[in-house]
Length: 177
Image 1 (cartoon, rainbow, N blue to C red):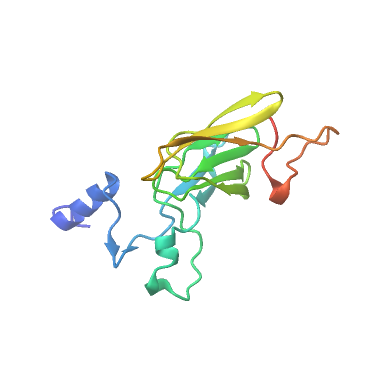
Image 2 (cartoon, rainbow, N blue to C red):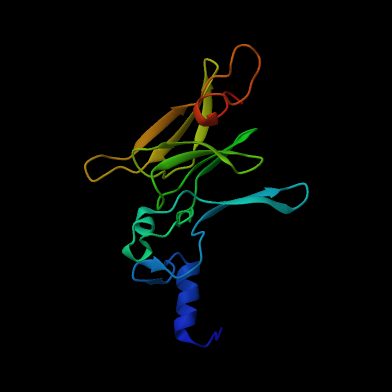
């Protein structure tokens, strides 16, 4: 790369300073993932796993130039709002991502649950417990006709037989932690 070339300098600074990645015909020229979540093993100082931040955005998945291609998850070019518990990593896709909230296995990065939200996540998730039930709350963007909202999601309760586990549909998120 020639640092004296104004086009290359602008490209680097625009991308680094959130000006967006270069595009051609509405498609990013950089290899995906466009956003990712990276987990570190702090005891070893190594990357434990890395996954795309969400699915492929519809404008890429449905792009006419990509018709007929099987596009793997590219992630959203946004900063995920994360919440870590004993066993889970809970994440929205962030303000520029899709309106989806995910629960990932903290040890592996495997997605174990997701739900749609009324708008993209715009705040960090927080958690609280009430009457033995764990809840996750976050702010989501509103539409032109509605304001922003606070959304509360209740995690499934742990079984009372003492077996623990994730249970629920598709291995839904664990109960109170």
